[in-house]
Image (cartoon, rainbow, N blue to C red; front, top):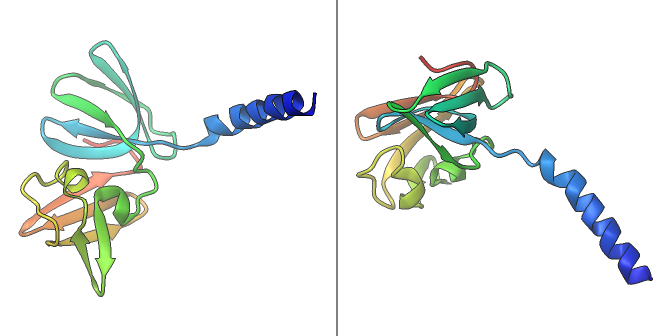
Length: 136
């Protein structure tokens, strides 16, 4: 009896907590990441909101497409980066190559997070990805 009650209670608690876990996606225009937020696909339309759940806008596929991710945490690790000393380096090529395809592990990268965006700089290229508000 106690085991059944514990299992039912565990399922109820898990069910109540699960929807509160925030996952965020990446919106791309052709090959460039343009926003981080939350998206759902509906045929050839992507329904998009920013990380706060606001600024709803629809995007047509193509040229837009999205990839499911969990990067609204907006920490360097979400992008495949790690702080070593006073610089960020690529530690997960698979994650970082979604933003710069030719990056290799160990290479230095610029990472700047603001209230509105994340800016990644690799070699001489800079990519600014919106996290609040709508991309162009």
